Length: 187
Image 1: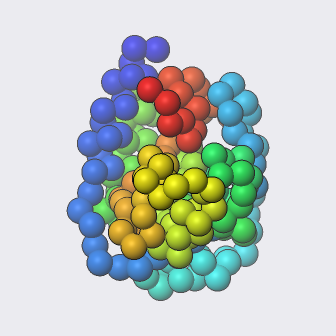
Image 2 (image 1 turned 120 degrees about the vertical axis):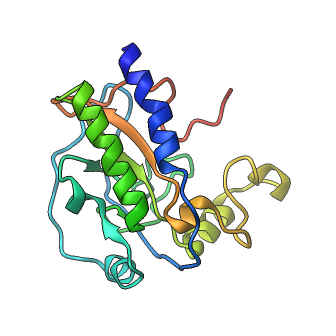
């Protein structure tokens, strides 16, 4: 277990990337993933309009780097802190090439230490209009919203594809305990 925690700083370092001035759009796949739950097998779908726009913007599909990296975009489901789907139809993770390369490198390091483990992506590139939808979905005072979602008039790292929410699954597709669940806002 101690070796698992050694990969976390590497992931954080690998995923802190420069921001590029590009606009992105995206959506997600409906699946509930919680601690100790089994991640469903990969599915193949036709490209959505969002995927076409991501590709047109120069983003790459992380699974083209390593098909063992699992993608379950939880904002394509209602299994997130907002309780609603924002990315209907998108089930692939598109990232700027430099971020995809670094995430792929983190996957290789993980596989060297734990050959039967894989990274799983829960959220990645988020278009600014989705950021606004998230902001508008929170029924609280704006000053409180800052604790959960970036303001829609300010870009976040997710808008650039430079923030990637990941976990680790074992050979049976079971999500390992990473200390907190996805979308945890506590201390």
